[in-house]
Image (cartoon, rainbow over all chains, first blue to last red; front, side, top):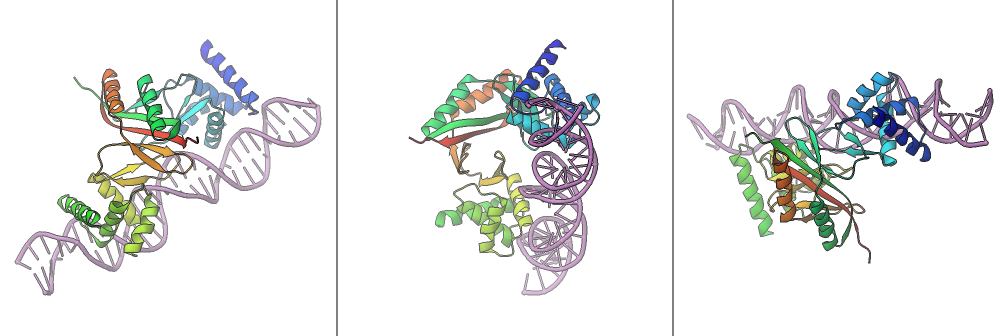
Amino acid sequence: MRQTKNRVQELEGILREGGVRVTRQRAAILKILAEAEDHPDASELHRRAKEIDATVSLSTVYRTLSALEQQGVVQRHAFENATARFETADAPHHDHLIDIETGAVIEFRSDKIEQLQAEIAAELGYELVRHRLELYCRKRKD
Amino acid sequence: MRQTKNRVQELEGILREGGVRVTRQRAAILKILAEAEDHPDASELHRRAKEIDATVSLSTVYRTLSALEQQGVVQRHAFENATARFETADAPHHDHLIDIETGAVIEFRSDKIEQLQAEIAAELGYELVRHRLELYCRKRKD
DNA sequence: TAGCTAGTTGCGAATGGTTCTCATTTGCAT
DNA sequence: ATGCAAATGAGAACCATTCGCAACTAGCTA
């Protein structure tokens, strides 16, 4: 995957600029994150990263994810009754629909909702810093 | 407070009907919950409940909250980076705005957003079961 | 009203995801 | 190449929440 490769190099650049060293372990984790089409949790990322570099420890996965989150290249989501799940922050902002039967996550975006949120905050005398919108759903069977 | 008293008796009735015994400890917790104007967490509820009945243990607070949640009379909220907070489920459905500086919680309701959420789920082939909408805000200073 | 019994309690131990500690290793600027 | 601050692996620590168990009790029954 040429795309993934480029993306990983791009991410590595962001880290170096932020004064964050690109170690063998972090490179492996970055690659896994860039390739991921889903929203894996730390232990799943650990499992995948070990296939690239067997020395990656779970501690490092957590530490790297925190560093990446701080650099703004990764987003952490704490969905209901579940461990934290992660995704790269390259796509434009979106919210999540979670299939309560399978745990699958679908991304969606609603400009109308975004705007309404800002309006509500403003009406209450607040400035919206960030939000969390999650739809817990069941697949329609018909 | 006559209102609180009635509400507590009402809640006790719901429990008894659900086959859940109303113990001294649960009565204390129910009273605290009915009186609460905020969104306390388990340890805060424990602190308050002990003033009514010093024998209430933290385990019982947790167990009671779970029972109450199952009976549908209490709602649990897991806001970002914080312990679970609780409120009685007597008010009509609403979402929450959290002041990221003070932790204060303000309730709000937007029928438009509610409707948009259902539409989005439907478009994606899902049936909306429940949702979580939280606005993390900073007080506007001007 | 006493008795019975399954539900409940307090206590302390267990859980489990995540973070921290520390001795050792290593990226990378010079 | 070298030096040193940053990063690592392993395992301990954290901490909110849940569990296990022996003692207690709500509330039905006679």
